[in-house]
Image (tube, rainbow, N blue to C red):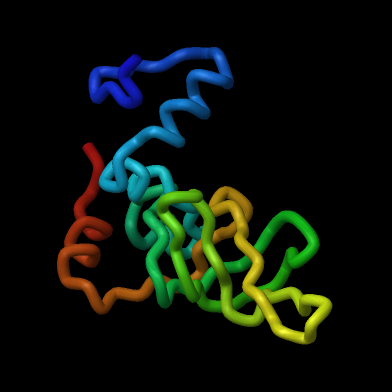
Length: 127
């Protein structure tokens, strides 16, 4: 059985959608780790979503840590989760571990524009 097909169109079955996301190669998983832009950024760039990168400032809008605004510390493409500075849990032994958060539960407030290629792709208007 083939694990991943680049000709996969779509399916309404949740199991097939999960299979596609799990078995996708990293260059496609990069496109799946996206988040909504704030209203200010949405008007500025003319886009609704953008890919998440380390250094972006995000606001958590759902879950236990909602209304927290911090920078993205790590983006885990294999699991499809992000880790945010300051959002961590203390383990029993006293060590602290970052909590993975789903990118759909955050809004990008401030974009890290150090990468020239990213800047040009954001400023490019969709037709």
